[in-house]
Image (cartoon, rainbow, N blue to C red):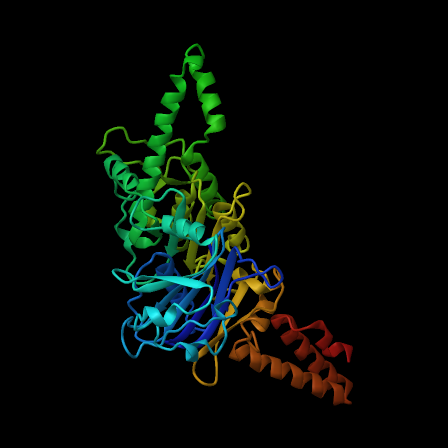
Length: 485
């Protein structure tokens, strides 16, 4: 299941906004989407709404308006609709017969019909039936009638927060702010084998990945370590394996089942190598008793004996390790039917050289070659290096209009373009220089002009040299070199 469109009417800064998450040529929903825009345009708000949309959670922030989600399942399209104050006389919600095309006049055609839950009035909408969920969530779901309706019902009915989920997954990773809870982590995140087993026995559909949930990440890692040990013991006790040596059994099992700590180490070391650090898998102390924790550390590469507690790592590296590690473990060896990943500010506190392959890393985790289309990913960013890793139609630019509301449109700069071009075309910055740089540019142009008209050779040379010095310091275009005048 994937999101095709979101339509927002009269909600906060979104008076009449449509977000299109489909491919412009095929019409199929995109696997990854990047939201960019000025502060306050609603990037984080949209990620939060998607999270609530998918989790069948009542959207507490709605004080007016209506939110519509168009989703595509394997069997067809359906619509999830969240109106303000269902049942209230002033709730503006309606559905038109032309819902598939999102007729702009739809809000005038059947205003308040569903808000009043007048079944007789909505039953006449051609080719559609609907179901109302009012106990906990307060939303409607609309389906086009036909043989696929039951299949759609079955598919979306399976994605429910009421039970453990093995085939569906929702991950929401908000922007990190406020108190840094990592400082309370200690040498390793606090948990135990018993805590890990309890978490996995009640594994939910929806997960938050943040500073506040780092203990859950460690619990999953502990569980996967112990699960692998148990599977190895079962493998060694198979009748066909009883005559083999221990070394042969270890090699055979490891070939088919790579150590989870080694796999996580490969992921983390791609980041840690930049800081001359590494994940010490060899020195890991694995839990045996239920009260014990997994102890595995980061260490200096040039001094393998010196371990570094996680709360002493740099902010950017530590935050990224736990965020990407948590997401990786949630996807690890999961036979998923569908998944959603929402990440706010993936560039948070990272040095630019970490960012150029960031989306490729997320893609390998969430949509590996064996399951290339299972996850729909949403990112909100202010970073042009991150934004440049998306196709222009995968970028949704939110911008303020003259009427004070936000509209959305697709990007312009091609994928892989110079981040400065993305800043100019999609972030719409007219200049990339600060105030002093702009002053130097004006001085540079003035020196060029003076040199062009100066007849005294000695003074002309002085003007040219002064312009060349500024041009060299600020890397101004060679075509503006005054010595070529």
